[in-house]
Image (tube, rainbow, N blue to C red; front, side, top):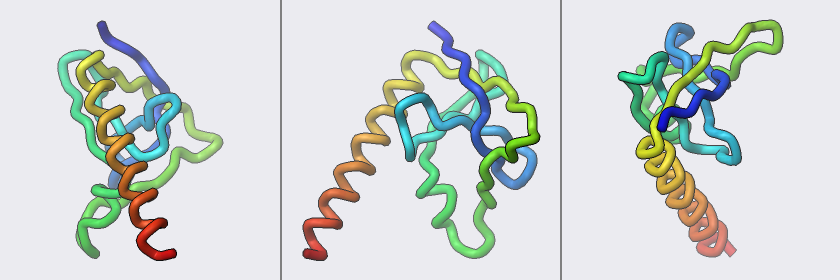
Length: 95
């Protein structure tokens, strides 16, 4: 099954991505049902000074529709859970 969601961010001012509903860290790339992949905001923003730029969609911009398959959403959910566990682990480690 294919799911449609509104764009939430831009990568390098040209590539639309969406944070799936209920998630904060995982993102979906994909303008059509045939393309698309999963990544995380953290991995996009920590690739050094020459890495991609990620910016939230401006309030006056019309979001594009991003498509994701069930498999991609399942991968995004795993990424989301992994990051949440890392954040919890990091918080415990600094206390």
